[in-house]
Length: 321
Image 1 (cartoon, rainbow, N blue to C red):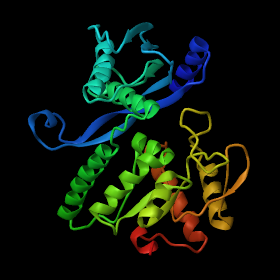
Image 2: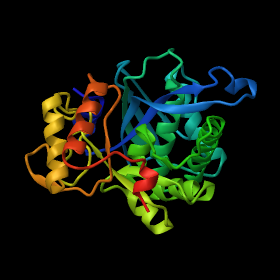
Image 3: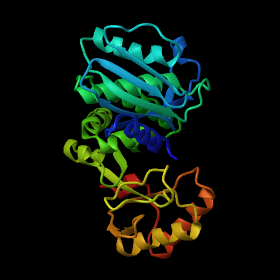
């Protein structure tokens, strides 16, 4: 059972209400591990381990929170933020921090779980705090500024552009990856400031993104070019969205099946969804995940299919005008 399904089911059983779900990823530093707290530079990136919060306002001042993995439960109000232990202090600290900034949330019922290993240096405590705070901000419209996230995008692009320059190249395209990308794909409120940050950095950069996302809509409004990406080894739903990796059949590992999907896209511009429906997709690039078994051989197979159909592989910066 996926983490999302687990917390959603427990919440509905416990509180007899449908919750909102929020996801906050752990992270690693691709560059500069252990330099961040010594005033050095780092290049952090989200990972596919995360906290999931099932949460809903309860119409009171009481915060009732279940830590599902620990089988622990606490209740408190914003007027009695008494010290607890471990995870309890983190969440009380989030509420206290919001109040000190004049952002007063109401009470909530909340269930959370995580697949981030605790104590592994993957920022589990940061994910716990940021996920809970993000949820309260959304649920109570507290007006916390998503532009703070845009600053992280600018920082990472600056670091990447520097690396490219040192190698004698220049940055031509980018993508919002991992959990941040998933969140921005679903939320225009988040996608617009992130895409605007890219435009402020360099309005010639192409945004690589899967189809039917809020990122694509934000880029169109702001005037950035977009390269729609077809994920050859991922399943799509009937709306053209990627199926969650937590669901059976979401990742396609069979080489023959991947080749058939690419061939279908090249021949008639469609993909067969996870329910068997044929869906039109306008794509300019094809993506394979490096962690898919046999990814290198799959890439060779995909390239062969493209060239056999009379196509050729070119840099996306030459393809998108």
